[in-house]
Amino acid sequence: MTNRWPLLVFALVMAVIPLIPGMPPFWIVLLDNIGLAALVAMGLVLLTGVGGLTSFGQAAFCGFGAYTTAVLTVSYGFSPWVTLPLSLLVSGIAAVILGIITVRLSGHYLPLGTIAWGIGLYYLFSKLEFLGRNDGISGIPPLSIGTFRMLDPGTIYYAIWLAVLISAVLTMNLLDSRTGRAIRALRRGHIAAEAFGVQTPRAKLLVFIYAAVLAGLSGWLYAHFQRAATPTPFGAQAGIEYLFIAVVGGAGYVWGAVLGAGIVVILKEILQSYLPLIFGGQSQLETIVFGMLLVVLLQLAPTGVWPWLMSRLPFRLSRKHPDTAPTLPARERLATAPSVLLHIEKARKQFGGVIAVNDVSFDVQAREIVALIGPNGAGKSTTFNLITGVLTATGGSISVLDQNIDNAPPQEVVKLGVSRTFQHVKLVPDMTVLENVAIGAHLRGSSGAVSSMLRLDRSDEARLLAEAARQIERVGLGDQIDQLAGSLSLGQQRIVEIARALCADPVLLLLDEPAAGLRHMEKQRLAALLRQLRDGGMSVLLVEHDMGFVMDLADRVVVLDFGTKIAEGVPDAIKSNPDVIKAYLGVSA
Ligand code: ADP
Ligand code: MG
Image (cartoon, rainbow, N blue to C red):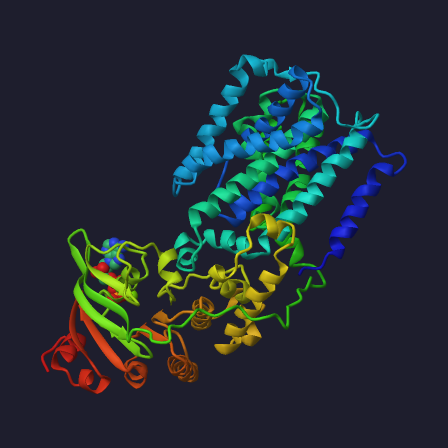
């Protein structure tokens, strides 16, 4: 739970500002505009900064919000309070439709896609007869409560900033939850998140809709603030500006959106008012100066101004940990579990002409540590990816506890109790060790986005975090629990991945080079932990290059060379196997 007093102070200050005697109305209008922009940017914080989906088209969703209320209030006489949910709904539905198409795009195609519909929707707004074409819709009624009409900028100010504050709290609650961690894991690619059961397309669509609804809210407020809706504020240029705001403020930070909106709106205002005085009416100049100032700003604070400011605070906003929480129910272990946990039968994977895994067969028994070894490029990691559903096999079959998993996606494989670490560490570097590890327990919680936003998820959340904390203690990283994962040594990050995998309550743990980068003592501790896990009933399949470590620890060893299994047996037999020696040394024994 984060400290709430800075929020209260901020709310109080904002509430008092319009009441200050002699406050120029001009400043209030500016603050209104900042609030409206902050709402859209907050959606972008989630979508782009947190989820990694860059959108240039957010302004179009403001358009959906604004035009919905404009049409319904002006043409059909609806009350603005009735159109509020409808505006959000229309923005949300538009996001579902555009999102389903867009979030499938990857790489540069995604932002390009958003530019495309940003421009397209702008033309749609300016061409449709019932939206008033280029002239838009005017005569939109003001917001009112009873007979009190929010006509001037100083009264709608409260509606706008209340919306900003509520949205900020809901967004922060969402980010600080099971669903939030799943969203935050998206930016580092989908493979790690999916390995722990996150339905990544659904998570992406969720942030897409969330961001659109916030933009729709901003559009709804804007329509009743301006009392008119025209196409220009919802065009591609505005979309780019919103992205600017999010990036300048700090694209990963909720308050960065508010700060970024303040910086950009005020900067633009100052440039527009003063530059023509200095340079005499050269109209395009402010755009150029504006662009240059933003570049300078981003040079000074590359991740945005908010994190830059926060890192300069003389104190730190601390978090409290749940110390005692009820434990999560563990996986039901079959009393008479089949002795073969993992059965691989002639598994094959071809990448074009390369046969990475060539009809490999082996088993992992219950309570067994099996090492998969072989020179670089032998197909070890590919075998892991076949087992965990990251890759689909070209041939053969794989089963876990007698259940065939040939075409199962990663989210299904982990449900059967197979969890893993990655050769190339896949943690979210700007999440704490605790938060990263808690992703491992994703499937053991059930709270969704809405209950998280409303903080109804706290008991579920406490159990997940307590489980994560327990696994972190277990692997010996208790002192690092609150550090950002990215600040740990690579060796420690591998151990964090083991804790994350343990959070899934696995029956089979797949470890891809877990000891790489560890010091001697750390390797010994890791070996002791793995033995302890095995003796507790878990099976381990590990890839490792340190032969001393492997031969000491493994019950059985499987050797791959150029995708083909060349040997299998107890460590002593493998050590003296001439084929193995030849594969490793490149000479005949
Ligand atoms: P190991 O983990 O044993 O070092 P890998 O399983 O990573 O080996 O790779 C086995 C072979 O498959 C290598 O020749 C590698 O270049 C190739 N390979 C692995 N992944 C891919 C991929 N996604 N596309 C094409 N080739 C791949
Ligand atoms: Mg590998």
